[in-house]
Image (cartoon, rainbow, N blue to C red):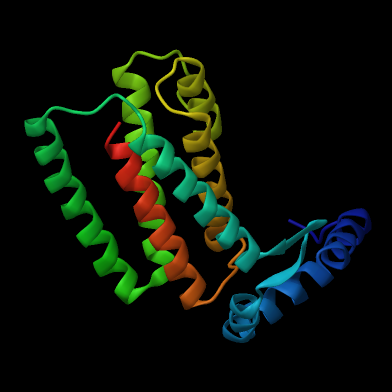
Length: 198
């Protein structure tokens, strides 16, 4: 077997040139990953993919939405029976204790866990009521169906959307510091309590 033809060698050289800068960027990001992560964690205000954000403003807005939703829920005429309410409250308290334990170790993980609990319960509500939603429907889509069916209020949907916006920025954009992440956990816990009373 002989040497590769000049065309193949040229193709390999072109391929190496094409991947030169991405490889350099990858190597540098691996070498400086801790420093890059520290910088990203300190970002509270910025612009990412053309979207400006200020996490503290979003947190404040979400807190107002959840508080308004709680007021609406307390004025609602539907309430579980005493036995159901007591059982649900015990379960909710156990879930919240777990969220708080995780949050004490990693506030970002606490945001992820409270978000997962909210999503799981909202999906359970939708399936138990046999609403027609796509298997991979977003929380927003499921919430809209539930609003249309009268299962949740518009303010509860706004609360879900506000919390989800915060959750996505913290989890996916690495926005916020521990203090802000803990504030997001607090907002998520308030919302979780509300939706588990539905």
